[in-house]
Amino acid sequence: MINPVYAAAFDRYDNGMAYRRCGRSGIMLPAVSLGLWQNFGDTAPLSRSREMLLHAFDKGICHFDLANNYGPSYGSAEATFGRIFKSDLHPYRDEMFISTKAGYDMWPGPYGNFGSRKYLMSSLDQSLKRMGLDYVDIFYSHRFDPDTPLQETMQALIDIVRSGKALYAGISNYPHQAAEYAYRYLADHDVPCLLHQVKYNMLHRVPETDNLLSQAKEAGSGLIAFSPLAQGLLTDRYLNGIPSDSRAARDFTLKKDSLTPEFIERLSRLNAMAAERGQTLAQMALAWNLKDDNVTSVIIGASSTAQIDDNLQAIRNTCFSDEELKLINEITGA
Ligand SMILES: NC(=O)c1ccc[n+]([C@@H]2O[C@H](COP(=O)([O-])OP(=O)(O)OC[C@H]3O[C@@H](n4cnc5c(N)ncnc54)[C@H](OP(=O)(O)O)[C@@H]3O)[C@@H](O)[C@H]2O)c1
Image (cartoon, rainbow, N blue to C red; front, side):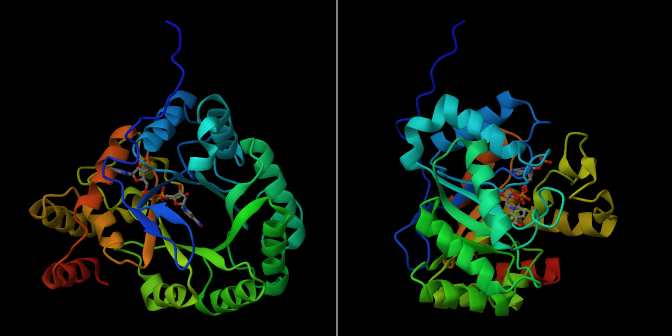
């Protein structure tokens, strides 16, 4: 059979997705965004990656989050994205908000890691080539580098925006004090920080304890949460063992030994609570993030379109009673 040409669903902005304003900016992002950290590299089937990306776009997910070293192998998630962009999504470029980042290890030697101007500039050039794009919508410093003057990293972001290779600048994984400097420096140079991307979920509360949420709000920046499902722990995936096709089975970024009987017991209690709310555990976990207006979007990962569909239902109920929030804190030990 002749392969059909992809045409985006006509109702893609009309089937339940919510769009939230990103700090004090002109940008709105979908409440649920899709990240390509895992499951989109050159070890994953291209057909499945394509199916997930197009399905997400059809459901109103117009923000795709990448980084130079997403894969495996490093760079291959951007290359996969580039192939699918070229074959299917390029007519929709102006409807898409595409990010990439540099800050973690990417190539050997002193210029392929951390926060130097040299690394950020050359990495973005490579990312644009792999993705077949003229520009990204946001370019992030992927992590705070304690050994590079923050001024150098921030000035590189500003110059990148001025060059037109990125429309906005962002920071990721910055501790409070470094974020404070970044917000001020960027704003003083008329390139306000659009987003701080941080790990935030029911089990990981650093954005609360380090006051990153209120800090972003005061700075007029959005805050976007990555790993909102704690890499799959906050779902029903591991309640009855470790499935062979799961992330924990790979035992790399998600360790098998985190799944102790005591921990599974806590997940089971959260799962029961979600059921009482009429949600899956994944939906409740995402709703918990989205209950806070200061969270612009949650960046989910997925290994199937069914997971994406499950997660999208989270948007339907993001309200929690005080009792529910107390119980979640008690179960998670927060
Ligand atoms: N800035 C940073 O430093 C940083 C770091 C990490 C991530 N990120 C970004 O955040 C994105 C998301 O991170 P993440 O992949 O850790 O997010 P996550 O949403 O916490 O975990 C995603 C994994 O959870 C499982 N899952 C998802 N939905 C499910 C459902 N409904 N039911 C059962 N299982 C479900 C899948 O695991 P299986 O694959 O096992 O099916 C999926 O791969 C990344 O792609 C990246 O864009 C940024």
